[in-house]
Length: 259
Image (cartoon, rainbow, N blue to C red; front, side, top):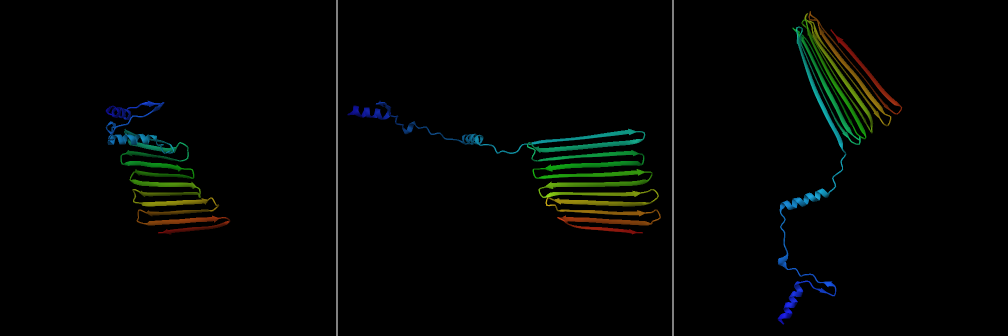
């Protein structure tokens, strides 16, 4: 009886072959090894899963930028001359050419001084472009100043302008504006100032409609050495609008003068 029980235990524990069939070993609980996963194992598993995920497809871009500056100073028996200049540019373009941004800017300065006489010039310009599949935007701006002091006479001039052009699926729009000013004072006591400004705009729709406007303004003041003061001013404007075959326009001109 004891022998039969022993043989039965052996049959349950070990594998035996009977008529070509395999009976698998019975696994004991103490033979099972349980593994405790720490935080590093979990993070490692997450990293492997991320590596298998496809990365989102985004359009590629090419970017570039550059900048430069320079200066020069000359000193001789006639006086001092100083010059400085600088420029920069940047580009951000899609590889497929569907969109992009471009920009550039530069500045120049020059100063010449000889005794009490002085001449100074400053200027700056900038341009930019932004385009896509359904739009194009161009803009530019510039400024200029000029100062001259000679033999007790002083004259200062400045000007600036800006423009923008937009083309999209609705049509096109463009605008420009300019300003200029001048001040002077002479050694004999005469002095004065002058300023002008102008602006233009134009819109053209894809449906054939169009509209535009123009304006100009100006003023001038002069005071003579004896105290006499002269003042002048003017302004004008015009506009138009077209829709199909109908056109509407208007013009206004208002001059004035005073003594």
